[in-house]
Image (cartoon, rainbow, N blue to C red; front, side, top):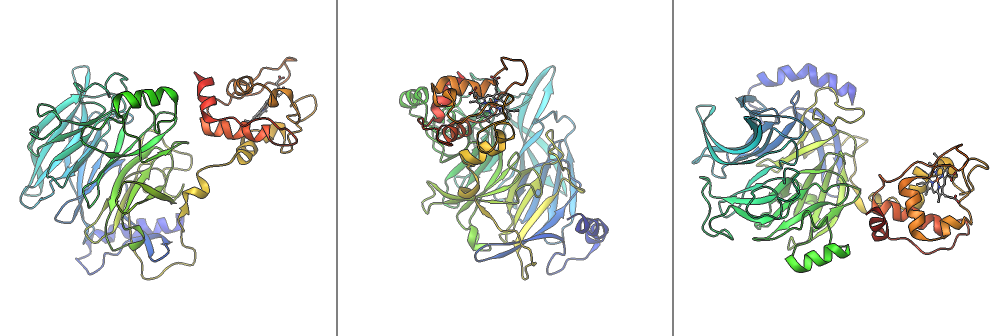
Length: 497
Ligand code: HEC
């Protein structure tokens, strides 16, 4: 990959000067083989600084919003990129900054670009929704449509237009546990506005922009071709989510995390008629930008949600049921290859555009790569390289089982056969503690165990999520001649409290 990159740098300068041509010549990084379609991955743009939001307008131009406040536009035919705006007042720390962008769906007649960003007003962090007008190749006449409280984190945000012509805004709870369930606060909500910023008369409350509530921090907002609205949302330590949004829906945060699987959650769900996510991930993947794929250009992906992930450093292809109400299966692409991925958009010809996020506040080992951040283009390929990337089915990798987890985390001391090392690491074979009271065993795992002799101690494993901890303990209780009952995620969760 490195070698190809130097070529990209050498040709990058030339590309911009080339006249318009039938097919844009870009530097190719990789090829992908799907069941029906061969694809190529190319670099459309590079040297960006956290391109947080991508949007393709109805004229076929790709808009890029960088977190520090820059807005650029790329001509997808020629690859020509123009910086059109730098918003000086953008306040960017960690995950705040310029975070949301969408073009009016009829951009020719209504050349409006909607932006959301955080800024400082005296000592307060605020978040505003602003409408710019694109005229004479510049963005001008900013009109503030709405202003809400902002925070150092959990600001959301994504913007999308619905088939009803309304503007939807996914806000974060600004890390305040009292906001998401409070209908008076616009934070931790899906808001619905007219394109001029006024409140639609058919909102649940015609005086309030709130359309749905109970959210933590959404970074994905997408309409399907049949008009269903989906969000992606960051969970806390567990349970990242994709939700299907309904008018007046309550999605449970902070009383409920992900699926309704704990007793307290079931009680809250019963009382407030909350809705469950259509998918959740534990361990977390940090889901970010998401879009619906409805084009025939890549038939394998028709009727999917394409979801970028940060921690997961991958693109997730979520295959929807034909009615769009369920996610039937999931595939993983590019894991660890291009680093953190922040957003995704679809071109008029069905090409997929991804933005990397390797210059952001949370760089990963091995990243940023030269030229980061980049906009990657994925489109059908005529020829395929000898070593194409093949998507992996999530069902095959998502869940490491108890044995694999034990080997990853425990075998270095207690050894693969559980026999440990005499006098240093106790044997787990026929151990009364392993086979005894679940609560005691769970506490050893989560809190570690100091040595009676002071020689060696056992580290705490509280960072494991509930499922992983349950899998490991169930495995050691049923291996090497041990024969004790299994341990559930719920038991782990209640011991944590
Ligand atoms: C760095 C080495 C190390 C690792 C890794 C480790 N342990 Fe331990 N473990 C110890 C030591 C040392 C003790 C004994 C502490 C003492 O003196 O009581 C212990 C004790 C235990 C005990 C109590 C056993 C008994 O009979 O006293 C259990 C159960 C246990 N470990 C499970 C695990 C599991 C499960 C994992 C993996 C998630 C794990 N350990 C990872 C070092 C380790």
